[in-house]
Image (tube, rainbow over the protein chains, first blue to last red):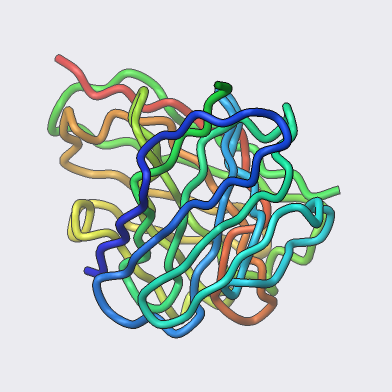
Length: 107
Length: 121
């Protein structure tokens, strides 16, 4: 199975900061990657698919980039509503695999 | 409005079986692949299984392969997860989720609220 390694596992940031989260695949996955946001007690929410396509209704301060093995999720100007845990998910092959998550906390 | 409502969770002893259901509405259920994803308490997400729109393709996580079976009833708009030989480590909140791509398999754009499965003696 493809391993997805996210970094960092957690970070502290302030409102207005730019935040970058990375996800590295153990083998090339083209651009078959998505990013999700999860808040406590809630189901995950799709933010980005195909590595860089913004899901409908997601604010434009979120962006994704990368292909092959290295991917990033960026949040431009962090908002109070963005404090959550973020996960990547590869859809290149079976079994699908998530990264271990990155918790974004308030500094 | 897309709605996914899971049911069937509960407390079960190790080695026993359980069947989860996910009732779907608000979209053309038979056009989309469907997934199960689980989350142990306080831990991260684990993808469990998927089934294509026409049941022609199914995939499983290594941790459940041979024990869990995914199925769907397109006439009833219901997704199932049949779980056999349950283990303590299967304890988790189980989500069903809809695939983003019609007649394809991609990311997961709508999720239910989950049903809790607890495996304990």
